[in-house]
Length: 154
Image (cartoon, rainbow, N blue to C red; front, side, top):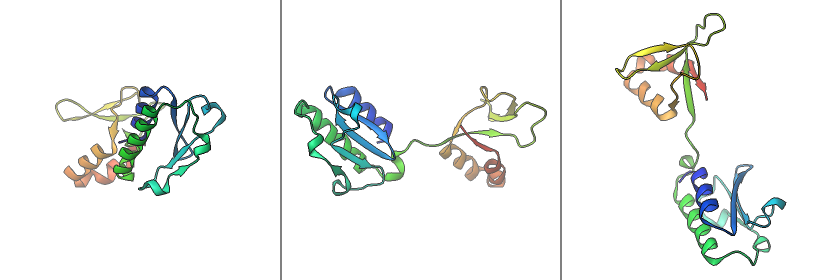
């Protein structure tokens, strides 16, 4: 499970609990105390067990419904079951041609026929995930240095 997915589940299916990501940690608070920065659970994103999750039960409002608290615990367990590396969204890149001409930026796109074509606007440039680029490099090892040189983070 990814962090954004966990936040969406908690905020979308619970009426008394709120989740947000701040300073590399997932913070769970009562809906009525979130504006004050109060939280009752704080999960740093690199933890792998409940033991490493900070608990401040004083921040637990009596208004929190048991089913909402159960949902939070379930989502946190799903995050703990997810390897740390997979909790974060994949980085995305455009492939920018190194030898720009004038004020245009030239980007490489892969068309539907599998041929590489140029586009001169980043809006039209195809966006690749890190894993897609890694697969391109594995399939075409001689182009790996060029792909690395052209990567521009989106």
